[in-house]
Length: 102
Image (cartoon, rainbow, N blue to C red; front, side):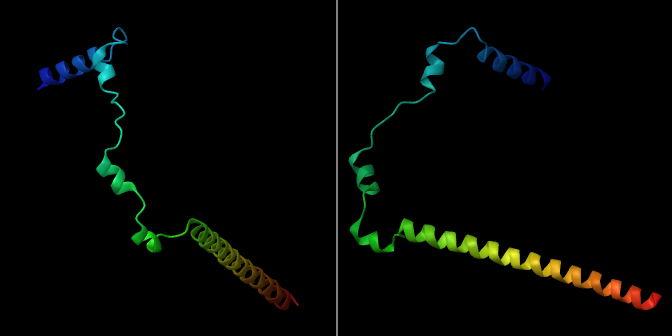
């Protein structure tokens, strides 16, 4: 088991050695650009029958922006409510402490 591990590590280190920078094997792994065929182009083309089901980018962008604004408003409102309750509670404690001392 250790022998297999040692040989696999050694072969990995040998394959990544800096001596072989321009060999053809490493160039073949890059891949080549192949143009799309007629079938692929037909599948990627716009279909007029499906056009009514596609969302319009501008309206989707506006709706997303409105949702973001509403989220910010709701979070800000919640933070304000928490702040007001904390201030009111602190004020009530002060009033209770003053009434107790008086």
